[in-house]
Image (cartoon, one colour):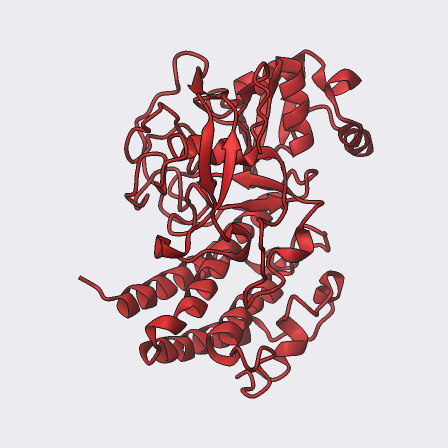
Length: 431
């Protein structure tokens, strides 16, 4: 059995292989990304992954948070790749190394990190886990970028899942409510990001939540009922977003000769009605809910349900990690119905993996919040971002669990996000 250092070293190597594989198929002009506020230039983002690993694993120390005492192995790395200080739009005009230079930086930073890890103390390994999970998150962001730009999907192997779509619409699973500890506990023995700290008592009133996320077919009924044009279903903010976009369907849907299709990376495919709807904004999710007489769950309700009624378990099916889960790690080429690693104790399906799920909660700090070493991870985004839960088909399995909080602006429609709903008759109060 691997010890902690060996397991962490193996994960760091695997994450780097995964990162490099996502853009490995790009050729020529495909490396020239347009300046969009939801993507990064490819060389910059790859360089940033190396920089972050080098900075937090090798240079950052509690008594030297700027990393000034140990220089980067790449000259001018601080001025090129520090996302905290390098403005987004300037990243297209920086004098970056070429692709070979970026690869050398990635290789060198990883080698140095592994050497430092081998000599590390147990109480100082949190920085290596931080770098690992940061790279895992960028792996999903790279895939989102390819899809946003209509570029080909990476050439990675996928698994076959012989799991038919549910024959009936999702049913509601009722929870009687109660008090539980929301968030991470110091004795979990797992890495926790600052916005998950720390577990605090929350009371959730009785509610009922859908057993599955909303499907393409269910969302199509809203589109064909002219739901995008009916103001009564949209919040004021949602109407402004909808009108500015001029949208009448999810961003990647197409209708030709009376048939609906969906762009997926660089191809157009018939709309798969049994799949969970994906790449919809929270505005669209809220509008669908009003049309259907439903509502989004709060993040407390979502976590309470995912943990089987607030139990101290990490996943809907218990404590076992979701290794080899079909709905994670980009093991499926798209979000689709998949079998969970084990049945949920309450009959909830696809809560971890498939699509991120929008909640009705603003992204806010937990009581007693304090920033961690990566102080810019959460704090700048409190208030105007919304919480998503559960992970997508592209999320790494070692990263996500029932307490994990993701966060995006409500108008983002490039995220691999869908939603599941609650019965609107429930008050859903959370205290």
